Structure formats: structure tokens, C-alpha cells
Image 1 (cartoon, rainbow, N blue to C red):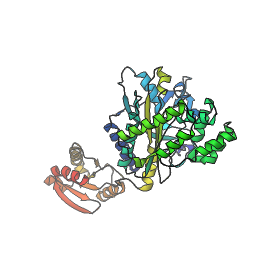
Image 2: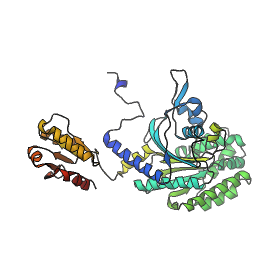
Image 3: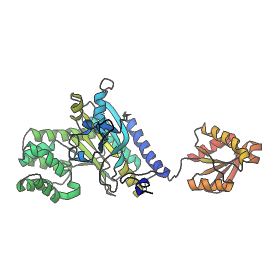
Image 4: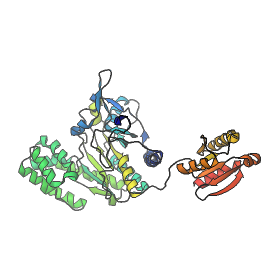
Length: 438
């Protein structure tokens, strides 16, 4: 058989039930936190017109899966959930109230090089507020993200924040002209991967002079607490409106953090955080964990001009994405799940022979009507084989309906972990299983 017919495309994966239980647990917790802050769900198509996606991602546009469909239309698979949101808002302006607070949990696709925590198909969990310029919206999103991480069990995480408004101030200071802003942001976006020397080489490659590259390298040596960094930047950056806008935005952002009681332990001002996407206009943020290192767990920022590129209207917006795959990677590595399950089934309905199949199905239906998850054995194995089947799936209990139980309107309940068995009236089985599930 051709290998391509039996292997999974590189960078994409199958998920067996035990993996899906973990993923569903994380997604459910994320969804509950988002909804507790008033964010509501939407979904958008996997395929968008190419003109919707093109010109929005800078150098990363080359990672978009794009093709021509049977109607000779050029289309692309979703690269992220932000650009589709901008298109969605434009198409539904008359129907949505603003500020519009949405969350979206769907897969995206990138023709990237697969590595630890990075795949070609993966889920993003986005949270966005559209229609307000107030930075309290930015802080609320970061608060929701921090609540998600704490409830999942993360402790050593850092929310790094900055403002893209520093880049006009930097290009003024470096005397590169406005045309150097995009190149500077792209070089700094690689700082964590290539280090200061690598950034210097990137700047030289982009046409910066050695003096400009050295000046930027000197700035990158900036350390200390937030107030110390801001004090140094006030002295170092050239005076002008660009500098004032940057400092004002950082101050407003910190005030918004205080309003939401964001834990300073988890906040880190990183004045050279860049984020590579071209549509960011103001505050930007990323969340990382100290160990294991798998890249950022969350990332986002303010994109006040993106929706206007579709709608022609000035509609500010801010949002962030949680990288589900990296969350799962870290939680697997650190064994952070509060459960170890292979199945959601609470009990297997078993019977010694076909005479009791009908009664077994009827009892299972009664239990299911009381919100219990009951599987009826559908194979041809004897009772011993049915018990082996339950053990292989990790089902904790067997509900046995045989001749004695049928006559007495009872059911035998076998605990497969302790190998103990009791008999009880059928009408009490639901209460017993609910109690054990607590």
C-alpha cells in the first residue's frame, strides 16, 4: 500500500479518545472563563477568499495554504482567527452591538516547519473586543487569560507587554526614517530565537548602518523593573510626539491593569516585544512559561486599523489567542491534569447471554435519561470477555443483568478497580453511580 494512504500529513495529527478528553477539558475551561467575562461564541469558515487573507500577515503570508478551487477562484485556509473576525464584523455591522465581545475556538492552518508545540493544523482559542479604544478592554482580556492559566494550574507564567508605538520612537531615535519601522519590528520579533547578535545581523541585512545596529544593540541591554526601564527610555528616546504617544499608552495600560487587579508577579514590561504581524497598532502581549520552553502560550494585541481595511470605518479592536497545542504540550509534560481517564463511560451494561439483551438496553436507557453515560456491550464475547473489554477501555464499573437480577428487579454492580461487587435495586443504580462520580 502507498505510504501516503496510511500516514498522516506531517504537522497534523489523529487524536484518540484519551487525548480528546484532555483537550475537551482544557477547551471547556477556556470557554467557561471567556463566557464569565461576557464574551460570546462565533465561528467562521475554514476557507476564505484570497483577497481577504492576503496583505495582512507580512512575511508570514507565505505560510498560508492557498489554492485555486474548481471555479478558478483563488482561496486560502484560515491562517488565524483575527482577519476572519475583521471580515465577519464588516459583514455583520448592522446586527452586532458595540463593543462586540466574541470568542472563537477553531482550527487554523499554516505551512510551517513542525516542531515541539508547533503544528500545521492546530486550534486557536481567541478572545476579542471590537468597538472601543479604551485600554480597559486590553486589560480585561489579559485578566481573562490569566484566570484561564491559573485555573489550569499554571503558576510560573509571564505576561509580557509592550506597545507597537515604541517603533516610530525607535526609528526616530535611530534616524532610520519611517521606512525602517517594519524592518526593525521584524528583526526584534526574532530576538528570543536569534539573540541580540542575531538581531544586529538582521538589521544590517535590512540596510541599517553599523552605527544604527550598534545603537539598537545598546538599547537591547536595557534591564530592571518597569519603572526603571521607562525612566531609561524617557532619557534615551529622542523627544517628539512618537515618544510621548508610546509613554502615554504604557501608562494608560498599567492603570488598566491596576483596575483589573492583574497580578504584578505575572506582568513583565518588555519594551522590545514586537510580534511579527503587520496589523498591530498599539499594546501587544505574549504569555510564556518558564519551564518547559515551548514558545508563547498566548499572544495578541490591539489592531485598530484592520477592520477599517474591510469596512472603510474606524473600528478599534483588541484581542488575544491561546495556543491550545502548546497548553496541552506543557500540561502533558508537567502532568497537570486533575484526572487520568481513558473514557467518559461511567459503566458498561453487561449480560450473560442474549436473553437479557432487551432488559439491559431498557435499563441503560433509563440511566441515560438521568444524565449518566452508559455503554451497552454490543459484541459477542461471554461475560468474562465483557469484563476484559471494560478493563481495556478504562470503564470503572460493570452493570450486570442476569437471571437472578432480572427476577428480583435488581442489578449487580461490579467495581473493576477494587474487584468488589454488590447487588442493588435497579432504581438505585443511578444514585450510586452519581455518588461515585463525585
